[in-house]
Structures are given as structure tokens and as C-alpha cells.
Length: 110
Length: 119
Image 1 (spheres, one colour):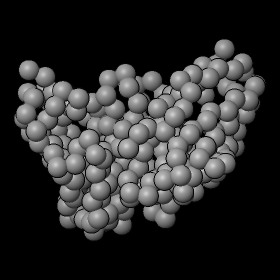
Image 2 (cartoon, helix red, strand yellow):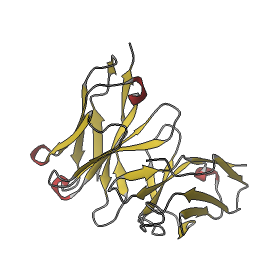
Image 3 (cartoon, chains in turn brown, yellow):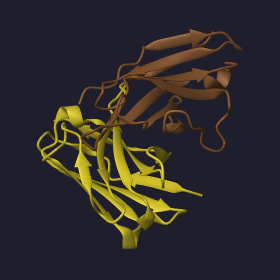
Image 4 (cartoon, one colour):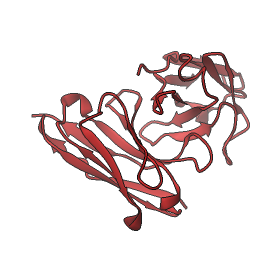
């Protein structure tokens, strides 16, 4: 199972919006609406930010939003803040009843 | 408050075995599926294995199938990962994670335990 493809890095200035893409196949991202996104700050465990494509868990800022089109899912962070600087990973359930993570994206706030 | 605490990580030689544990508290453990995820030093997350709330089904990544076994003891609120025939590429921080109760995601994570495979 190959990892989902994400850009290695994305950057933006405070207050701007950025979007991270996550490209899979018709057997994972494209087949189910079971894409989730995780934030991992340096030296810490991952944290769930978006589940089932576009839903935010309680306590997650509404500056984070998710969407999907075909085999590509996206995470958008609006009103970028210094605290958003972290690594972000997408994940998808697959037709083989397994899960696959994305390659990860480092977000830098300029 | 959900708490997941991994233990058992160590330095082990190639070909050796290790058993990881994850102690769960703050929620009804028997009501949730559980997952192991690993992260090699400086690398991304890799899904390893998943187990249903009652002990089945169990699913594995191709990279560990036949070498690793996931299990749980609901009476002890504990999740396990038995790792055999360890390879250098298994070196990673291993996280246990709770699956969402009615959603497909990993909604809580432990802090991880480091496994190093080296001679």
C-alpha cells in the first residue's frame, strides 16, 4: 500500500490561507469519505483535526476545514497563526480494510 | 479524560522479538477498536495494525503481516503488539491510538514508545 501523496512543505504569512492536498487512488481516498487529517507538532503525538473529509472534532478551531474531489482530499487553514506551524498528515481507509497515511506536509508560518 | 500510555520499547537485535503494551484509561476500553501507528526517526506516520473492540477483526500493514500480532485484553484495559523477526526498518516510535466510536479516524493517541532494532 503506497502512501498518499502530499506536498513536502507549504508556507504562508500570518492571516493568510493555505491548502494542503492529499492524493490517493480510487481504492482509498476516491472510494470512501473516510479521510482524516492530523496535526503533529514537534516532539508530540498526532492530534485529530478533521474526520470523514470535512468534520471538525470538538475543540478544533473552525479555521481548519476539509474537502474532497475525486481521489484528492484537501485541508485548508484560514487565518494562519504561528501556532499552526506543524506537520500535517492525511489518512484514508482503504478497500482492503486497512488504513494509509499521507507522506506529510510541513507547514511554516513566515 | 482519555489516557493511553505505551510501554515496552527497547533496543533489540535484528531477528529478535519485543512486546509493546498500551494501558488505556478514562473511557470504556471494550467499546472501542484500537490501532497501532509507527513513525521512523525523521519520517512520516505509518499505519501498522488494527483490532476490533472484541478482538476481531485484526488487520495488518503488508510490511508487518506475518511478523507482528495485535491483541487486547479488555479485562485489563490493555492493547498489545507482539513483534517478531524484527528488522532495522522496524525502528520507530510506536503509538497506540483509539478509533472513533462511530467515525473512521484515530481520535486519541498515546505519547509513543521507541523501538530500536540494531546490533
